[in-house]
Length: 138
Ligand code: DAT
Ligand code: MG
Figure 1 (tube, helix red, strand yellow):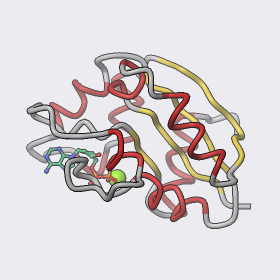
Figure 2 (cartoon, protein in one colour):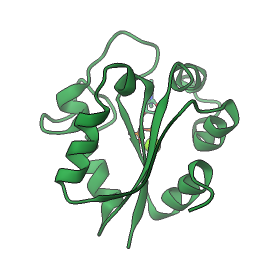
Figure 3 (tube, rainbow, N blue to C red):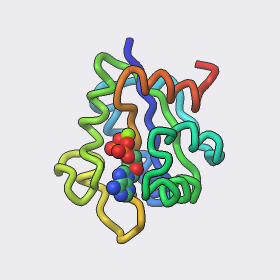
């Protein structure tokens, strides 16, 4: 069965949207294998966002992701990687389609980095790598 790594970012935790976001994932029919609220270390975030190192938004992204607790989860189900990306909506929350997590709950707050509530792995390779970073025991 396919698995994906989901993060509810600090904006989602601060805005008390964890229940609403987890509800949408469960309502779609996916099941949770692991859920944990934690303060991500710089090492964890550097490994997680290695592909973005050197980009202009990298430091603001690391700062934002360190600004409060993150809810990390692993969800499971047929085609959950694509399915969660679809539930999440496109990266820029102002333009994400209504009906999606980012489209319904997110917007531009004028920050240096897009505060778009959630992360979801974008391929089976990313999912395996990211689950290894956040939940090495799985
Ligand atoms: P996604 O989270 O949709 O997979 P991504 O992997 O391209 O998007 O980027 C990771 C995060 O970095 C994204 O959720 C928000 C931030 N980000 C991406 N592109 C950005 C940009 N051009 N300006 C500011 N923040 C950006
Ligand atoms: Mg990504």
